[in-house]
Length: 274
Image 1: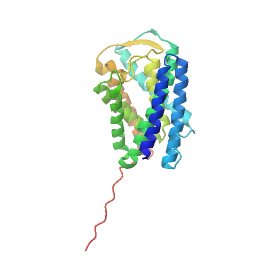
Image 2: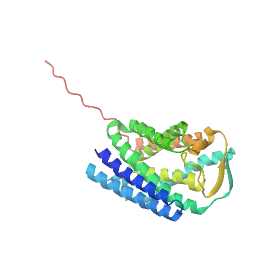
Image 3: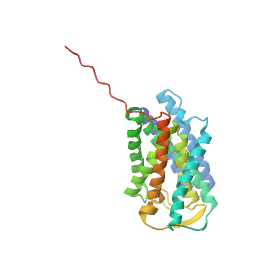
Image 4: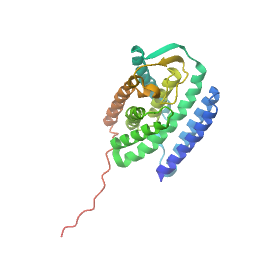
């Protein structure tokens, strides 16, 4: 039942938060404030429900070291997406038409914050963490990665390839980041940095949700497998490549730190000899 209660709590905040943020998206400052507010509420509620259902402190969202962990994760997310855009730029598939606008980026900061926090609490904080206890790190990483990718099929310009790309790049990378650090702060940071770079900095489509107005006024054209097509650069083979490399790095770190959880073996009853 702890899975049920934890999911209900976080999903409830995610739904209310998305409705509230969506209602004020025309006002970037209100979007920023509500996004940060509901991110904090989701984290506090997650910590509370974990304490109530598991009778332990939620160390995965401990405040100590959270700022530096989120910052490191966000910088990595921005760097990864920047590497994708840089390759598309040199191929001529990403064109910068001029400077964009600051105000939309302000609102996108709040919007992407609440998305990163609630999705990481749901998929890594609840599903991956609890499945890992019984199924081990590798099986849980695959299962939650598949679920994470399938959840993106609900987006307006979603595609099967886009969902598969999300499974391969984000689903595995965020779970591996949690396994390596045993903290949700780094995957939250990477998730936020990636989404913020895609929308607020480079002005591209995020997961098939339509184009954004970022700090750069840009356009994209070219083969869908390279640019991601209507799904956005997350459907690009470059995104899959760079994120899989980051995933392998986190897996190496998790193994080195002894954080890989083996699959729990079901005990068999001993046989009685006559």
